[in-house]
Length: 349
Ligand SMILES: [Zn+2]
Image (cartoon, rainbow, N blue to C red; front, side):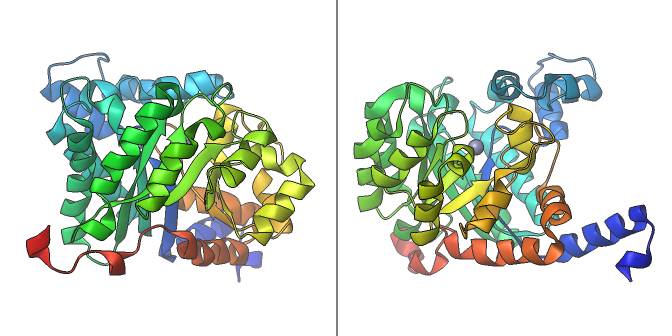
């Protein structure tokens, strides 16, 4: 019986149960999830030496306790991976490593997200940049055909609405329903929130919607509640990334619940970026109390020194294992991945 075990044993038992659960990951970035060992190996292969040892490299890639609480320190952890992920073969390799690692943690539905344009400095086109990630996912898919995989393309807000429209069209060209392999399943905006309200990206979202992509947006992570309203009312998203600000607005909570709009909750990451103060009750509690669908997500597994099992453990400690299990079961219904829509005829791909 779990309740007769000492605390450490109980935690171990809980983690073992969580490891065995088939899990759903709907919000995980490529750049912040590359295993440190892979970055270290690629740095050496390219004769790049920003750190003398793997352990030192790790401190550049993972948020350190004294750096927790600010978004800028958090985002700075993507600095070194971007040296490497400008080259097709490196993007393939890091993607494979991320997907394999998620498979190892028991993730059976995985949506990775990625901003193609910040991987084009060495000359890749946006389309090639998207293809590189899909290629890595396809390699793993052959080894684990039962794993559901899809890519969400991110347009960075600071690149503006026009680039977002171009990216939406490029995403559609690689959409899952137009290929017989892993494809793009969704569209997202990320990057600096304040001053870049969602309404600016209305046309890009309309294009993505017409191309049958799922719609999500980072909103209310570092901006007021109006940004979440706009993501819903103007962009028509089916899911919201973070959405922390929404807990301050009862009417918005009722709207999210009524229209079954899922919030992608990232427990560790929100503490690390300062979206939720350490020790403060995480918004996931309020969402669940209000009947808002939620998913438990890693955001950036390397930066946040976590994986899907540890995020689920964190949730299960606060909410109970039964609730955490239900969250994963229900979140599967909000996945944008629909393998049944993929082309069956490979000769058309
Ligand atoms: Zn994110």
